[in-house]
Each structure stands twice: as structure tokens, then as C-alpha cells.
Image 1: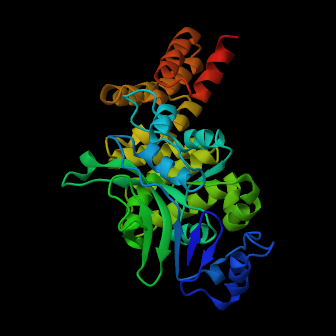
Image 2: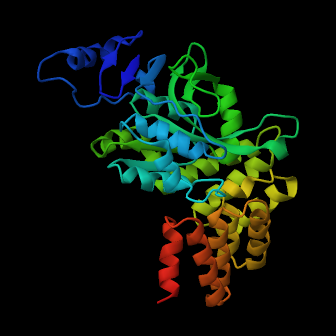
Image 3: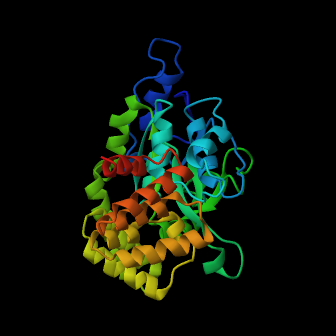
Length: 359
């Protein structure tokens, strides 16, 4: 089936139990645009496509802004890609954007958002079938030196086809196929999604919150989501060929649960095996875990390595500031927070900590 952003259902081999809802939606009576109907795992159609997206081709290192612009275009018309860049990446040297930054921007357009980890193909299908396009954090590399070429890349999942075993996406780097989405095999998405802990972002209209909560089930709760993600990581580690990403994902889930000492052990193992050199451009779990257990020197070392390669990533100055705060060096903490905010004046956590330290 095809689900348009205006709420109209068009038949493409729909299950018979959904036909009454379709008839209501297409009728010209006052029943137009009825309340959304929850589609469950048991009632998933074989094929769904969401429509009503603007295609955006990204500038270098601006895939997050492009993907968010694509995702938001499903809900809001006339959104400027460059406005989104100005909000998420005000510094030309900023190489990444966090999901919480994207949510904060979406909220200025009267949307709401939720970010989660431990996503699955089944969850993607459920979300799309219920009318929610999903921005996923996955990776891109093209070449023989994967660890060198590896980088984060965001794309918007807006359809799937079980008969072909593919999801459909709008991809700011690779396109949108014939205009209705570029096909990616389920296995390919899993391969490229797992290294970033299968993170995803769902935007939604405030009035659709109950529907989204029903779709996510236990995953709506952040703690239960972290526990689920930990189970996924442990299952991956029990597989035939666990790698550094599996340990890293274990660490991210443990950190989300506040189990920082255990998280640090997992991160240490991941680093010892080997991680892509850009990993901490996008994922800050190790810095958080090391801060929480007082391993400040390691925070300095890791953040300064990132700054040497990419000085515009404002989060590095924030974590340095927190390490200085932990050591009682308020003056240096303030200086680094000011550097973070100079890089990105929209960095709320840095602004809040600066205000706290300045009294």
C-alpha cells in the first residue's frame, strides 16, 4: 500500500481486514481522515510506500541535515535545507549532528520526536506501515580501506517490500531511485546499521503520540529500550564472529542504563580490537562512561585526538570541560564550554553547564 502524508490510503494488495478503513478514508463524507488505525506485526502488509517527500542532495559532511530535511518534508512543506544546516551545523568545520539536536529543531516546527537504539528491520516496517518515516544512523564506506573510509551516514526509510526483501529510502548521497525510494536489501541495512548501535529517529505530529507509543510498545520507554539494546548486543557477542562494534554497542547500552564501570570495560575491549578512526566523531558513549568513573586523562586524550582531525566537533570541548569540572578546574571548564558554544551557539547542554559554573 501507499500511504500519503495527507492520510489517504491507496490499495496495493492490502489485507481484507483493512478495507473498511480505506473506504472511510476515501469517502467524501465527514468520515474523511479517520483516526489512524494501528497496524501490528500480525497485520503488516507485504509492501508499503510512504509518499510526499522532498529529495535533498547533501553538501559534503551534511548528510544529517539533508536526511532531517527529507524526513521533515513529509510533515511540513517549504523547509529549507540551508536553514537546517544553519541550525545543526553552524560551523563549517562541524562534521556531525546528534539525534537530540534534530529533535530540538523539529520541535520549532511544532513536531515531536523520539530517538532510540537497538532498531530492527521489523520495527522499521511497523513504523513505516503506521505512517512514520524513520531516519536511521548507519555507515557509509566505499573502498578497500574500510576502517579509514568508514563514516556515519543518515538515510530516511520510507517503505519496504517483503516479497523482494528490501526497504526503500531517500538517501541524500545515493538518491531516491525512480522517485519512490531507493531499494536496499534487509541484510545490507543490518550490516550498515549495527556499527552505530542501530540508532533511529522518529518524528511525529503531537496528536499521533498515542499511535506511535502503541507501535513502539516497550521501546517507548528509554530504560526498556536500553535493556533491549543490551540484549541485542549480547546476542551479537554470542555469535560466530563478534567484533569491536558488538562490544561498543554493549558499552552504549550499559552507559544508557547508568552502568558506567561495565560500559567502560566494553568500550576498552572495543578500542583494543580496533575501531574506525572517525568513531568518536559520532558516538560519545566512551567519553561519558570514562567521565562518570573518573578516567579524566583518557577523556583528554580521546577528545584531543578528535580535535586534531576535526576541530569543529563541539561535543569534544564539552567533554573536556566536564573532565576539568570533575577535577575542580572551573576556569578551564568554562573556557572549553565557551569554545563549544562558539562552535555551535545552539548547544543546549554546554550553555546550561556554563550557566551553572558561572553561578
